[in-house]
Image (cartoon, one colour):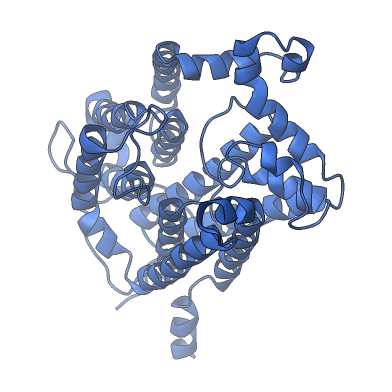
Length: 404
């Protein structure tokens, strides 16, 4: 009987696996539908982008399986090194990365974006750091100040690329983890106000970002009413065509591969792929995707609540928040609920680094769902201004660690 209980305890969350596989398969279908004309134009092969995305998906599945089998406290030991290497990559891309459309975001051709790697590295390190602080997080000099410095450095490097969408996602995810770990609410509110004001001032210094913010406050179809206003037409073009594409599918959609609006839609295969999905699969397809992400969030937080220690709890919560926030921001942008920004839809949009990093995050979640086999002591991560502290004291309804 005990053996059966231990075996059940060490099983990964197979429902989460099925959810992610469903999202990846749907993503491959939509990538092919939105890129077969582009692939034929580029290489003479309609499946050019599909094959590339399928290779990344296969790689992601392999890495996800490996990370699932690893005991998740191992990532706690390497979180500092992982974060430092990621910061070096963020600096490297600013110095020698190729400039495309005024931004430096990729290395090794167009294959890898350090900002994508930073999402997982940040969650791992912040979970390690927060779980080592306990109640001292409520002290300004021990919790808020070093936390703000770290997130400020990361956000500053990504803004310089510039990539405002990823910056907002990372700050929102880190802030949510800080709150979950037990930080003082008043400090968080003040920090959010200061951070929002700072971000707004920075956006004002980037013309394209400011124009998107202004365009968001206007009617996206106003360009049709005033076609001679080139600035207005340029700023609202993508939003307008995204809404037209999304609304063209009706309830059931026009059918896979038969959408007509995607040819006019910028970034149809990446940032705006949810609009293509809405045209071809309709409201039913959109609700299916929303349901899958809602199920992913539910399983992720369920894993977090069952984690056996504070590190697992904060880490699982952070990964779930990151993936859920990114999906919500992408969908909100496509539906003109938020200003337009370039964030891919996890597991669905074209992009190798985004897909693999997202699946790596799920692999860590699955590792946490399997439980721990060894009790490890949580050490204080660097960046605090005072001495070292013992284990975290984050209250959560996790099950107690099994005796060895």
